[in-house]
Length: 79
Image (cartoon, rainbow, N blue to C red; front, side, top):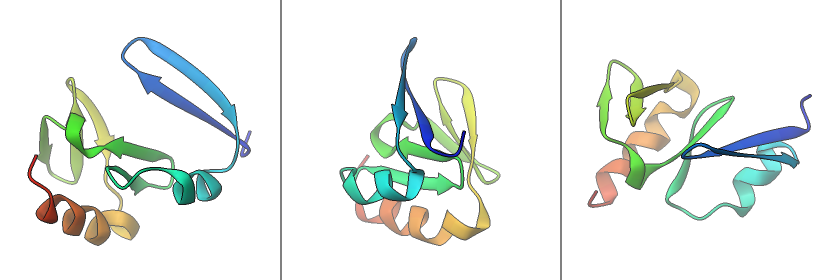
């Protein structure tokens, strides 16, 4: 199960056979890793609160490991 990633785009789900680490290298800069198990499109974030990003009222955790890089990215981009 470690070699699969599920993309959520609206109600559509796409299963891809790859590792998160490999995927991270290939994604555009507006897709940011926020957790061991999550990437987010920073342009889709509705709000950030208590170490969580919200997209369409869905809470996505922001872990300590990725928090600094995430907020650095957010602060350099106009949402």
